[in-house]
Image (cartoon, rainbow, N blue to C red; front, side, top):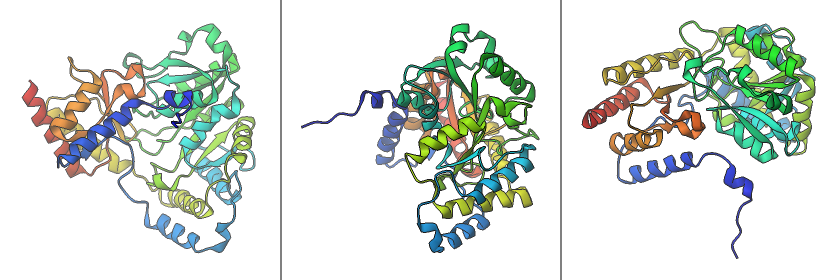
Length: 391
């Protein structure tokens, strides 16, 4: 007997990611030394203080019972102090903060907690794949909001059809952006909050890359805008900023009603984050508040080295102001998938085709700066040598 998955499964994620994984496996089986710049998983470990905190915590017998689904009050209070320190935003740890097993966990379940089947939500194109996948899980209709270079990858809110804005339950955006590495300023967020209030629309902002900005740029929280908590929530993660991707810890902040909705759903799904991981999260945030621990300098140097090396190869890429990614326009005559495949098979370098993130991503590839500088220079050299063969 054969059992097949649900129809929803066929609509989840992007087949391109699986396809790239198959390409990589085939190339590696041929003995090629592959440089993987595909998935945005940090290649550096957490700080010693974080590691020491989790080491101590796993020896504490008190952490081996079920944790509370909303996260420990100690962790939520630390998040509140960090938000005040970092953004000047006051949060109530009792009802405006929810601990999560990674921001993807929260993003995947948020539509389920807020929407009914047949509802509509506005998500960006290109966008991180879970944004659209979460709507599939909830039976929610997506309106794909195009983000284009001529507008600096900011949405043109007035171009959203009136009937869509009236029906939509929420709009989800992400600045600094994955995959686009685009940024937004205070004026945009003020406009977004005003638009949301006018349309009676919840704003979901994904701020996973707030601590990975360059050239003096300082990303802001949407909750800094006056009145934002009336219509907005914000996801944040310790994965990228503190090299804790494997720990799976993040949090949702903002509008108390929306936070409560996800909290209620999550309380029926799981028992929350392992207490030792929350102890490590507290250590990470406290270290940042005490010493301004930041990985931004590492990625800024990597960005500079890699883009300069590619420029020498004749591939001109605008330097991003934030994130661990480069959103690179590809040479004419190629599709995103074609050039990604050839770059792997001919140069041994993995990148992700732009259309993995939506139709608007065609004509680009996403490159993750998840190797050290020497390895990035080597990758650029391989790409240069390959490009010369096709000129």
